[in-house]
Length: 160
Image (cartoon, rainbow, N blue to C red; front, side, top):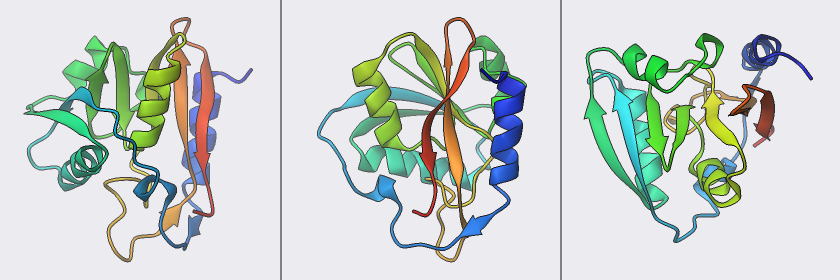
């Protein structure tokens, strides 16, 4: 198994290859399941607002908290530096880092297991909140980190 640093380094390399496609998978497949989620973000970050809108579109009840220092919450919830993005969220005991699609969060909450963190490192162009009209649609991975800090690919997005 690869280390978290190796997997996350691969993710950043893959993000450099843009793809152009139709609607991404996360615009479809909405479920009626509702969850409360708390999002910690900077007041000035527009893509965070876009991700929050994406969550609301997928029936999440969002507690939107603007903070001066998002890193404080990353440390509190054990987000590795290689997994960092612009916002951190917490739902049902699980940490969500970055532009993770709502369907992945819901799948995790149903399957749960021993995963403590889902992360879409960086700010992948084309991911929820980063999918502005005309933006490149890059391949990206959503990673899971379990309670023993093992990293795995939870879901891959390519050619969407």
